[in-house]
Length: 173
Image 1 (spheres, rainbow, N blue to C red):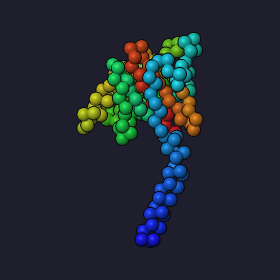
Image 2: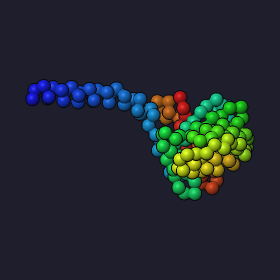
Image 3: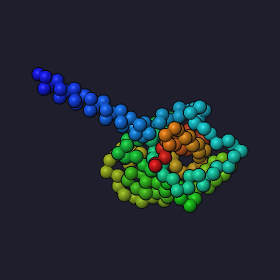
Image 4: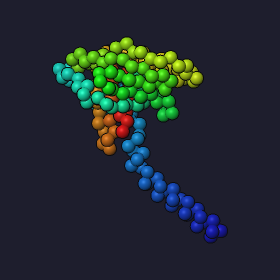
């Protein structure tokens, strides 16, 4: 009985210790909540008069966490998380099934993503196919970008369209 009690105490102590050691790592990778409205105070907006500085996005890669379109928000599973990268005035996307690319144009405080060119591999998962379709449709057109820096180095990029579509991405380290 004493042997079992010692073993149980050891296991519980080890579990508590490992949880406390990994809490800072988990806090850095935690999924930020999506903005609920365009006026959400958790999002710092780019002033209308200020030009968008694409050089701040140059060479960065962002992972998609949320996509809201037509009033429906999709939370993206970690295993199928698409990425967006910004290089030399272009947007490069990996949808999980295909790669896509399009030109970026700055117009005042907005960024326009031009027509996207994409590979055409078949998605074997219907949910991944739907996410890809929704993502590619959401990316093309005019966006108001906002960036929010959180403590611990976490940063989010939100791309909003006038029709209410928005994407929330987290910067890859």
